[in-house]
Image (cartoon, rainbow, N blue to C red):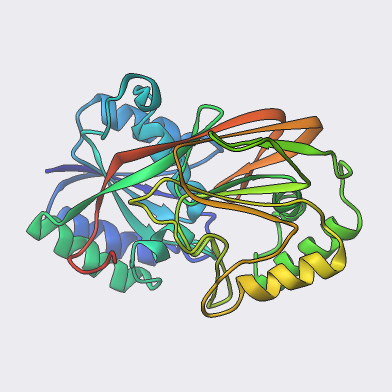
Length: 315
């Protein structure tokens, strides 16, 4: 087996010692190349080259941003949503190294890099792999979530503070500030779902799995019927008044994660969602700000990616 280990040295939990241990372990089972990323888009370029060269496995060691770049690199040469071709000849492995690691948690991968390495080695030895569905938005693949509006404003605020280590407290402050002082205002967005009347909303979340994120160790549920084996989940609020926000934050943090309310627009297992905004709004993919958009089409692509996961790690 030929493999490439992509390491983001700036990720929260990556260390030179941890990288060396991981590399040594992987090299015992594969012909391994190790690449440390040095700039935004570097992981994507490495993964794209690996896929073109027929490499068997690319392992992402970093946070969700690193994983997202690797996924987009692996699938860069395939137009899955249009031509019906699914899957990639190069598989993905993940050893968490960030602060949230939403995708890895959803796969049942341990948060501790050493334990996650053992899981990956077990999967490599026994050929344990899983086909995972992904989302595609404006030509960008996402593994767990994308959004327009308030959540993207939060991502933008946190992103401007790159020098600070991300934490639940930082995201809470960002959520409050972005709610009270939305950087781009609150333009109306129109959500279009096949078979339904268009609906006007103020913020839109699109989930590829659930939980959507984590507040510390507490999962955040927006679409609890959403998984890697289903279509996309839509969660949108028609208003962002404080009573509405408090109600749905409380529901999102509850154990059952059941969401109800007259200001809520929610669907599970959607193949396609279109969102149009009256004015440019912030747009995020897997927790990274992409830019501003007035129109985005979200597509569900089943079995898009092969991920090495130890038996029983993915529910």
